[in-house]
Structure formats: C-alpha cells, structure tokens
Image 1 (cartoon, rainbow, N blue to C red):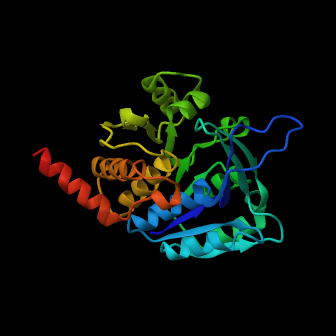
Image 2 (image 1 turned 45 degrees about the vertical axis):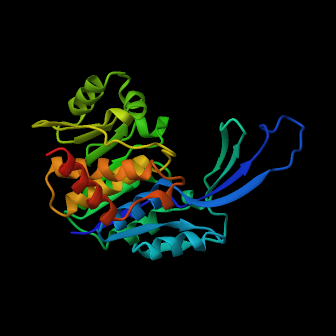
Length: 301
C-alpha cells in the first residue's frame, strides 16, 4: 500500500508593511521573506516526517524548483512533479505592524493539472493505495472520480471550501478532514454534532474527522465516535497545524495504528507545529512527536 498526494505547491511572498496599501498609494516594504507553501506540499512533508513513504504529484512553474528540492530533502518521492513554463502558484501577503494580513492568491501552475496528466499518474496506483487531496488544485472532481474507480482509499482535506466543492460527489471519500468552519459551509450546520450527523447521513460509509482547534478533534463513522483532546502547547503560529495533523494522521493509519493512536499522534504533532513559526519548516519529525508522547504519558500515568 502506498500514499500518493496530488496537491498544491505554492510560494508565499511575505511583505512587512507599516499599513496595508491604499488605492493609488505606493509604499516601501520594511521586510521581505519567501517561504515554501501550499497545503499539498505541507501535508506531503508531514507524511514523510511521520515516517511514511509518500509520492507527491503536481505542477510547478519556472521558479518553483526549490519546492521540489525541499520535498526531496524531506524524503518525499517527487517523480510525478512536472514543470510548466508558466508561473508557480503563489501568494502575495502584506503583514502590518498590528500583525494583521491581507493576501492575494494566484493559482498559477496549480491549475494546470490536465486530465491526461492525472490519468498518467494514477494509472500507477491501485486498489487500497491512499490518495490524499485538498481543494487547491484544478480537476479535483476528476481526481475523486478516478480514485474511486480505481478502488483507492481517499483522504480529502476539504479546504478551501468553495461552491464547486459543495456540489461534488464525495461518496468515494474514505476520510473527510474538515474544521468547524469548513464543515459548516458544506452542511449548513453550525454545531459539531450536527455537522458530523449531516455528513454521515449523506455518506454513511465515510469516516469524518472534525478538527476543533483548542477543543481537539472528533472522529466518527457509523460504528464509533472518538473525541481527541488537544495537546497543551504555547501557540506561536497555527499556519501548518491542520496540515501537520492530516499528514501524521494518514501516516499513522498506514502504519497500522488504531484510530485512537492515529488521532493522538496527529494531535501531538500539531501541538509541536503551532509552537513554531512558519509552515513547512514548523512540521516536526517523528522522533520529536514520539518523545512528546512518551513524556505526556509518563506525566499522566
């Protein structure tokens, strides 16, 4: 069994400014940093750092080579990342002195994954292999359809939620990963129990994982419900928390851990990520997670 993540590859360009640019105004940036980004990239790195083998598929533009290199350095198989002659997907982010931000997203090469390319990639994966998806690339519906036809187990992190995703057939999804806001947008319900109930009413065979920030997470299917508390952490930056949770969760499932263990491991990993700045660079390696779990159980035995 293998994991293939067909996901986004972004460049985050962050400009520190005294205030957000107003119409007709030109200001100088007080600082600039460039970071690797994209939910797809973050999740593949989390899966690899959790100790699982993962293949990443996607498209980068002419200036996106360093994203592929970072994945390779993290232990990700990048044989299905292709280069286009266009611009890599990116975000222009203004960060004010108050810590507020405003963001312009450019889809770029993340929306150049044509059906022929998708088919060429997935024809190398089979029944029971795991397909990891997010909603930051084009042809998501086709990926869901093809993955289902091939008998693959699909983990969908339904982020970001848009009108197109709301109307997609999710019957082939094995694990649906959503936070409260995303779950509410998909179902029209606001309370966690009702969000999950609505999703299971629509898709009885689905496993729903609802993440609740500092309130932890809930796993539920037609047979069981598990409430996983949040691990204690000094929060610095929550950017990669959800992606870290997702990556460690599916890596734990592949490793044969039961659902309680998978949720605990994912929650612990996320608590380490939020205590650090940045996205991909904040994702812990397995030894760090293992140590925190051991210390936690030692203190609560």
